[in-house]
Length: 415
Ligand SMILES: *Cc1c(COP(=O)(O)O)cnc(C)c1O
Image 1: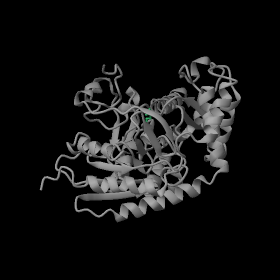
Image 2: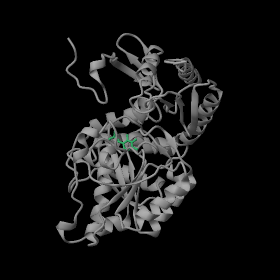
Image 3: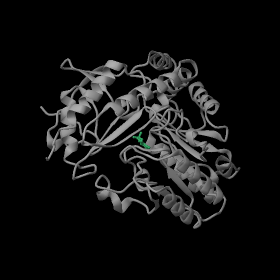
Image 4: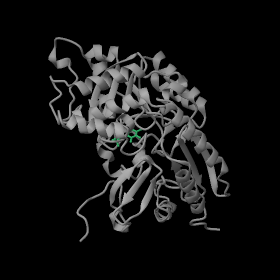
């Protein structure tokens, strides 16, 4: 009997196999038919240290002996306090307030609502959001609205709100001029993925552009929202990608690696003026947002353990080491069809030259099939292949991943 499950971003009509995973550890997934699959994309960009890090698993187990779920409106608990304090210790001091939610998309929705709430509470009529071309911020309606439009949201476009789109910085000056012109019209905020546009194709732009975009927003009092849901937690070589540009956002979204990638949790951090704009004895000015599982204690225990790992284990050294190993393997990949090699920190990406570029490139499914056969979990974005492994991946596994990519370079060659 076929499964009743409707999987995400899956065309069930293609009948592609859906392996059943029964166990995972480090950088490996094990299937019920006895295969070992190398997780080269960190289970969709979430797993940072490795699957089932013992400290995170122990923290989850310990929390289940004390707390499952409690209401977070008007109540608090120790794990949430630990996470909030631990975040303030390692993040820029201008970010003073921590709002919990459950996913990257909701962290973005919260950020957008905070920005509009800020201006509304100050009785200023500013509600327009600026975005960068090719961005991805999640799949809920607001997050889709501030993300790139395409085949993946065409049907829902009547629900999406209008935004101002700044060109991707293939030419930095064009981007900066466009941002400055848009900022003159008093928008509420600019939301951007710092340094790497993930789902848009692992597009990497220079830190200097990020720094200048931040400066322009500051000059025009436009709130700067950094969506570090993917780039956060060391992916780009530093804890935050913003660090590499010396940039501190007004609002910061974190999720994915917040719990080491073990259980769902997200935070949106805000600077004091944004919190202060909502602070009043008037209940009509409060921040009107919650979800049932806000700051779930088990998820918070996992995040607190992740923070402990960052404090006590040589995470930065592991990231530096993986970054160097990725760079070496990317450089060694020599094939006439490989174009656009790029790397930042632990993320390496390349494009396979094809005529039908884009998310629905015919090459994508053929690449996926080839990686499946090699027992490597890679999920090309159209004709773009990227490797974003957990930081614990060893040389043998990393070699196997890059060998699978080299083998896939000849697939679907039209000449
Ligand atoms: C994955 C991602 C999101 C959405 O996070 P979910 O947890 O999948 O909702 C938002 N922004 C960026 C940059 C992401 O990569």
